[in-house]
Image (cartoon, rainbow, N blue to C red; front, side, top):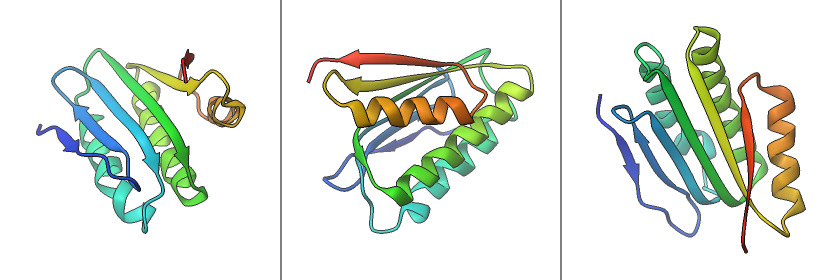
Length: 126
């Protein structure tokens, strides 16, 4: 399965999904013109990956900011990961947030309360 590698821009995050290592990363800002269009290939990739995932999938999310439409798409990404967990595979979401960014910590906690996937909150220096 081909990896997805997308360079970040001022409006879109960098993405690195690697089926061979089982490491999925989204970093940066997520305020694309069309969130659904941006996240659709990522969601489809995870659905495909879910048919033969690695024994353990590590998801690193390190967003400095995301808009409302991105938050819905991120939830869709997490729902696909939840399906992998429901099929008996290990998935861990590492939610990185800057030490003074209460909003990003809260966003991670909100996702954690909705999605039945293990979350690890990781504070990083601003």
